[in-house]
Each structure stands twice: as C-alpha cells, then as structure tokens.
Length: 181
Image 1: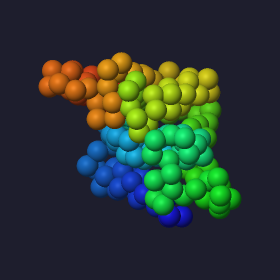
Image 2 (image 1 turned 180 degrees about the vertical axis):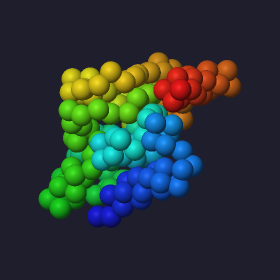
Image 3 (image 1 turned 180 degrees about the horizontal axis):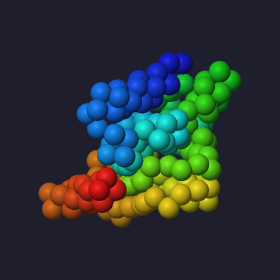
Image 4 (image 1 turned 90 degrees about the horizontal axis):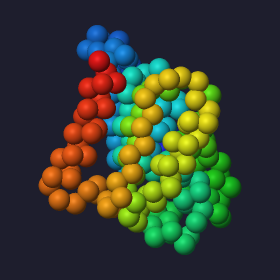
C-alpha cells in the first residue's frame, strides 16, 4: 500500500533507460495511460516532466485525495484496500498526497498533454480530469499543447460503438503525431 510511488519511479527509470541506450530521446518519447494508468501519467509528468515530450491521460484518476476521501462516490470504499483510507489514516493521507497528480502540479514546463474525460464515467468523475487540467492552465509556464476532451456520451470505457471508439483513438494518435513531430 505504501509502495505506490515505486510504480512511478520504475516507469521513469524505464523511460530514462530507453533514452540512455539511444532507442529514443525524451523529445521523441510519449506515454499513455487510462484510469489508474492515467494516475501514472499524471504522477510521472509531475516527477519527471523532462522525461517525456507528450502524455495522454484518459479518464485519469488524478485527484486521489479528494476521491478517496469521499465515501459517497461509487468505488471509494471498495478501493480503500488498494489505495488507502485518507479519512482514517494520517499515514495513508500523507502518502497519497505525496503522489496525487492534482495536488502536485507545479509552475514548471510540462510535456504536451491530451486528457480525456467521460461525462457519464461512474469510476473517475468527469470533474477530476477537468479540474486537473484547469490547475495546469492556471499554473503553466509553457506553451505546450494541453487538451481536455470530454466525451459527452462516454463512460469509463470510452465511447460506445465502433465508429466513436475509432474517432477517439484517432484523436489520441493525432495528438501524438503532432506533439512528437
């Protein structure tokens, strides 16, 4: 439970290895994650913004402290075992606060970012990625792309229907093509 940061530092180490071994460079490296993988994207963008040129965080769990402190939200109580209970445990609260992407946005250059939310998402409420992007916009010190795309008919799994899913995938891939070129 109190080892979650290892996920972030391991991911950064992998990115740095790819660059040090000349497989790529940070200016040509993108990363992508959904849901808890979106938390990973948010955390690594805070901890090592220099390591990636572009990041896509789709339905990202980025306001960990607020979400896990609200037992009225659909999944909170059932997720305390994995993430910790910041209401009852000061240690859980402080540890979660140390990596929560929303709580650790700073005024420094960030990678280009594509952030997707689903208006009908019962797992990561749409306002979580929206307020994360708003905080980035308020504190930003760069002119890199910062896109918030809210799918009005989507839930946690993205748009339903093949055509809409392809359209969503095309938007993410177009973002990476633009940001990494």
